[in-house]
Length: 126
Image (tube, rainbow, N blue to C red; front, side, top):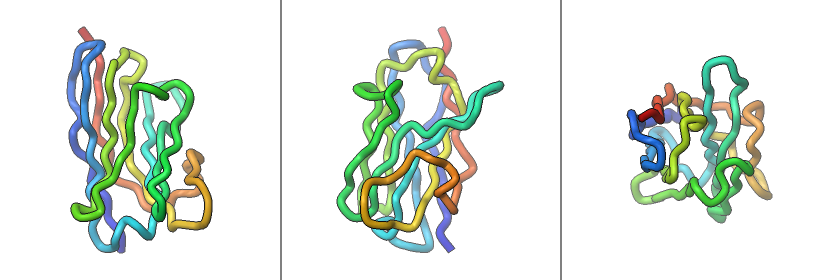
């Protein structure tokens, strides 16, 4: 059974940076596409980035392009989300999720993902 654990969230000032980690256990990550999603109070869950299991090709939603970078370290079985130039509207609980890899790009649709972590809170405030 694949398990995911996020870490790295915190309180940061606008313009700051954080690196979120999604550590997997129970299966190698190259079998899965990994997505990062966020949920803010009063808003719907939003897919912000994903990376496909085989080729490591990233996908980003428009609002984070150029600020967020997704990467993975297969040796550590961990996916990272580097988030720069943080804005107050980035405040949310960030979750990683896994979808068994199929040919093609990963998706930012949360309905495709079967395994979820517990989330890590990111708060951007001065």
